[in-house]
Image 1 (cartoon, rainbow, N blue to C red):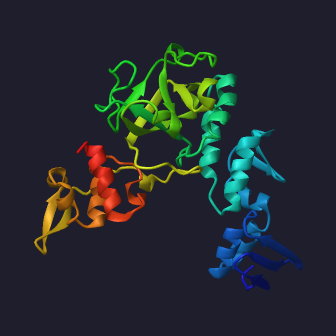
Image 2: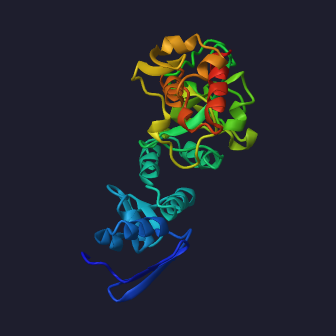
Length: 316
């Protein structure tokens, strides 16, 4: 399709004629956003792949994934209903569901049938997304010094990886608190310790989802600490742009009406009034890259809210 097809476009619906047949999509239905965007961009060659749910999902379902109508198959077997619906919902919003496919590939390496099945209940919690590689992003409550709340020996400084031998972790879901590394949903993590960090877990490393706490926690054999909690994560995918990155050590700031160079270490010594003199972008870079605050670029409330979060993470 290299020429413009006949179509009618509104804010809530789109109708397009393809191969002599009309196709109508309402707002909130599969492919509406992607199809509307293709029309506005005059990307006529992209139109056919957005006309059915299957055709859209097939663009992402590579390798062992196939599509049969509205059913997504992995190695010829239907995916669990929860995952199938999550992919359909993402497609309906024009989101790329590739992270869900990557998650399911990783999950298939988990050796425990019970762990695999129980994990779907945990994923129904609000704010448990996948990153682009299919890892689960969750929360962990820790002490003020970033040690774990149970033994006080495990360090949870951003960038740290904690790991146990899998056979050291209790796989009994009837036991609420037992041997293993514990992570959870936000409401669970906030109930333990004085601080909350964001962690990354390979679904293959999930050992148990205990029955207590309404499936809000997991015992795992390995996790990586990404950074400090600044707000609830999204429900679907975690953008790498929200993760701290070690780069840019110097930024320009303002003092006395003149531009100066400010290091992260300089910002460490500034109080609330002094931080207010710094550009918002500088503060975001400081928060994300130096203080390891996850989601620093999306804290609502502008500069005052960002500075309040910075002071909280610094303990000042």
